[in-house]
Image (tube, rainbow, N blue to C red; front, side, top):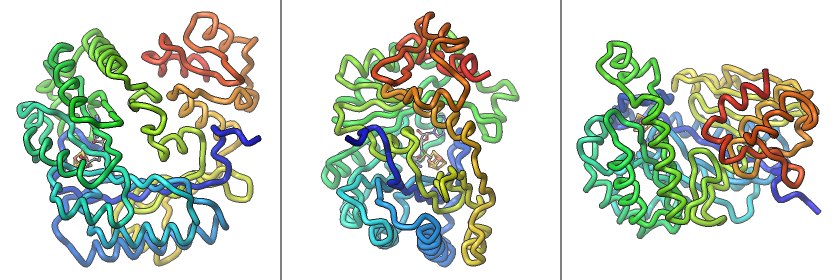
Length: 385
Ligand SMILES: C[S@@+](CC[C@H](N)C(=O)[O-])C[C@H]1O[C@@H](n2cnc3c(N)ncnc32)[C@H](O)[C@@H]1O
Ligand code: SF4
């Protein structure tokens, strides 16, 4: 019998669309301001399609597991470009009934646009609402109000059965009480999936510079821990399972198939500027990174060199990466991975981490316990060094 947690040789597809209406001060993703350069965008769509065909020639026939349009802001894409990419992917990698997600910014919510994206094949929308408080949205540099986000959710609900919401918490001065109320209000909107991200101060962003100047102070460790606990408590009381550290789903069917495929160690193609991929080529797990700059990517695809990096992973590196991802999920990692890392449940340091209640073994899988998850980085450090 095949293991339902084994992704086999199926491939996921990640499509990176780098344009944003404006750049948020906390974000260090590979993004550029959308200046309406239609020719550049048309060339990028063409390059993505060419890249997809070239990668199909490398991988040979595989089944498609899922598609994820991320960014940047893929809700700014022309729906017919989305439709062409979905159709090409389906043609090159015949799929079953797959999940096709697109990340949307509430500002792009027009009834016609959402309906056209659904017609293009999108069946799950991940909405970057970030906050439901106008002062917090201003602080985050967002170009929408809470009321606009609510209108966008309403429009999205008419076009898509499956909706997810991204929220950013652990903002300066945010109290656990405020956050509990805001999260509760977000849950009342009826999302099946919630991704609450703790605000990370990235050094290369405007927030990073403000932090360095001392004009932005994120919550201290105790308040951050208390905000994390609030997140878990509110979501679990509302019937959401934290199936991964920052991903909560109401029921099994609401989990993100694309993310699960990646966390289970499945292969995925990355297309678009800066997109990462993982492909098993001639039996070797290979990490790929596409050129980050749009012009370099478009030129690279046309020269058959779309990647700035292509690394053949050693079995130990591949196993370590898989373990790091899998331990973030409630499914955990297959114990078969451990031997490639020279680890045994009977020996140090794993036996100690199990004995101290940070990790547990269950049905041939190694899983982080409720005690281990909030301190996962430290647990992994102890395990792998
Ligand atoms: C790449 S963005 C794409 C979503 C879309 N562009 C939007 O902003 O609505 C994906 C998510 O990453 C999260 N994110 C980005 N930078 C972050 C940071 N520094 N700290 C926490 N979350 C962050 C946000 O919640 C965002 O919705
Ligand atoms: S958070 Fe979204 S809209 Fe803001 S810069 Fe990042 S990708 Fe663009």
